[in-house]
Image (cartoon, rainbow, N blue to C red; front, side, top):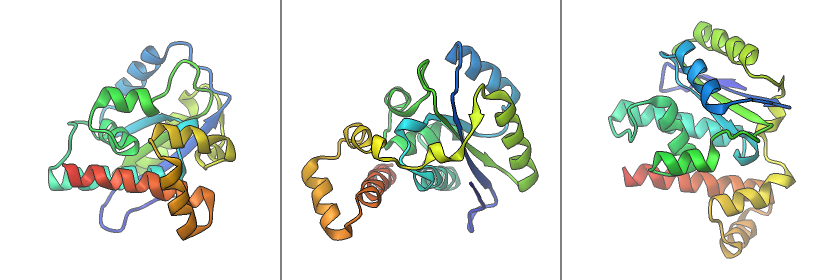
Length: 188
């Protein structure tokens, strides 16, 4: 999935991978960062990503934070992780949504300056990730629902209240996660 935000000049790409096997996460990330110093690319454990909308709003909030100079981190990739996790602390955000040794499904969020750059980095990420490209891992599945409720501390009461208003379980959960992300904006 790729989108170009209306108010910003950046291009956003959200791509997924399954059957990922990364021997050493720290080495992988360090080598990858050395290749992509100028472009914010963040990796997420796909089992902890609610949807492409979740990732897209993390990217938009990141772009807005840097534009308004209200960013928490000096690095856009890290800022997108903070927004996606609705956390102000990097360590908590990494523990919550970052890729781990056992992450077999991975989402990459790319925030590029233009379409050409975005396409180049999609190719680089696809070539570099040791797994199969599958954008479906980004979307919310029944298997992810309980994990995400626990991760984002969504109580059954809060979930039921949202469910009564909307009627659709997955959409209600995504909305609650986006609300938590929006709260982070108001705290900065």
